[in-house]
Amino acid sequence: MPVRIDFFAIVILLGVVQGVLLGGLFLTGTRAKVLSNRIMGWTMLAFSAAIFEVFLCYSNYQFQVLWTDNYAEPTNFLLALLPYFFIYARLHGHLPKGWRWHLIPFFFWFLYSGFWQFQPYDYKYNSYIDAWHPELPYKSFEYWLPEDPLHIRNHVNDLTLISMIIYIWLSLRDIYRAFKKAELSFWVFQRVAPLTQLRNFMLITTLFPLVFIAVKLTFKQDLGDYLLGSLITFYIYLTSYLVINHSALFRVESAVIENRKKYEKSSLSDDYGELILQRLQAYLREEKPYLENDVTLPKLAQRLSVSQHHLSQVLNDRLNQSFFDLMAMYRVEEAKNMLADKAFSHLKIDEIAERVGYNSTSAFHTAFKRITGKTPAQFRTNGV
Image (cartoon, rainbow, N blue to C red; front, side):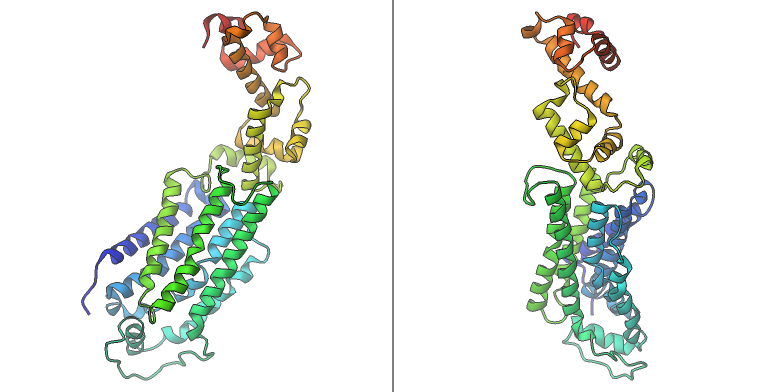
């Protein structure tokens, strides 16, 4: 058969290349220090292996490399499992208990595939044309091994679909629980990165079983697999976009990694920590607790319904600040607004210090000079 290179063949091949590049990116350098990134690296490589087989078959290159026939079939059992591992690692910082058991279907199918991999080329030729070119004549041959001793290979599509549904459901369940724990609606529209990104990322993954069912019901054998390959390519390029866009799903700062050594035994996950930060910033912006001269870390943690330890960890990990530094920053910013506003020109410096939460005028002067480089009086006279 002549080689077929058309729009779909090019799209899928580009997806293979991009997936391999992303896999290498996630599995090396600073990003590889984060468990969820390493899992995403293996996800990209598994996706690339799966769609490269689709490319070979769709383009007719499979005739040139018959020995690779169905080499990627075991990856069917990774297409939803690895994204589930990624979601779980992002939410909890580790893999689910007994995670190795989840890999049994993949390893079983990998070993079981030996029965059809170690067959003569004429068998592989027949296998390929049966799936992609049923109009061509078959060749006669003798089996070297039993092809399917357990008589389960005809059910590989059913087993793949079941695997997809189970792991997509588990992923969405864990994300829903994370939203509930953060006292947020699962369908919240405002940006609460990276939890909403995780949700959106996983909702796109739900297209896999839907398209899989539609393709298998519409096309005989594997003739529609190029559509599945194109969908996986879209998934790979979406991941690329999020990386290029510095998505919170994959961002890793070296300072954060160093700070976390202090909290190695903490139960705080990345995403719950991000949610605490979002709630803290919203509370500071709307309620302005820093204007109270008796506000403390335990009081603030209680109002946010989080533990004092987790709040302290968020401040150190994500803002590189102590509680007192954070209060000083917000208080000085409030004082700057008052000093620049003519409506407050009648107030003395010590009165402004008291209004922004300071009991001691000297402490206010020290904090103001450290943050702005000017005294309050100089700022009132000269401005920014």
